[in-house]
Amino acid sequence: MTASKKIFFYFFLFFVIAAHAQDTKDAGLWSTFTVQKKISKRISFVIDQEFRLRENFQRINLFYTNVGIDYKATKWLKVSPTYRAIQKKRFDGTYSHRHRLMMDLTFKKKLQKITLSERVRYQIEVQDLYTSKKGKLPEQFLRFKTDLKYTVNDKVTPYVSCELRYQIHSPRGDGPAYDNDFHRIRNVAGIEYNINKDNAVNLYYLIQSEFNISDRESIYIIGIAYTLTL
Image (cartoon, rainbow, N blue to C red; front, side, top):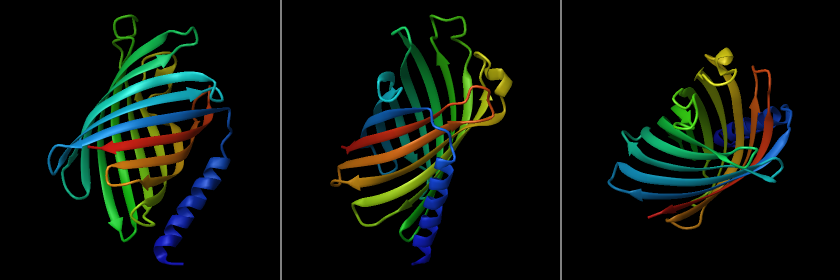
């Protein structure tokens, strides 16, 4: 076994052990459709539309639309400002409308067939801006995501990733009691398949778990994402 395959194997083994160590309470589905258009050598325009189910695939959780730009500052750094409009379904059937701004810095290093990347995201979000007294109280988080990909060939790329979310400030509910700490982790294993140069599919399995808070939740997510490049 080559060194690159050993690195991927041990990273994947760590993911499996960590994932099964979590308690699970729910299951859901995330489906995403992405359209991206290259504007120049360095800049791409990106739109995402995502739909999520939860409560064992039986209840709509939310819809969201991302509108953003990917800017390749260097070979190893990408900067991605994004706006997200979210419609999150309440238990009474109505929807909470949320607005999120995100700034991503993605650092990437390729070693033969292995690609290692680290994404740092700052996000700020408000919900029910004009219909709630707390609508102008923004939540702020930092998210740190590490990806490890192994390119099998031009079409197939399996990967694993781990993301930690750090709460800077959450003014709603009991959020302030948990400010300035980590409270959520996501472990993912998936495979990317390039149908052709313009179409790609991503299938993945995600485990999300909360910690360091009183009302913890862990869920299993099956995900499918389709990307169209114009």
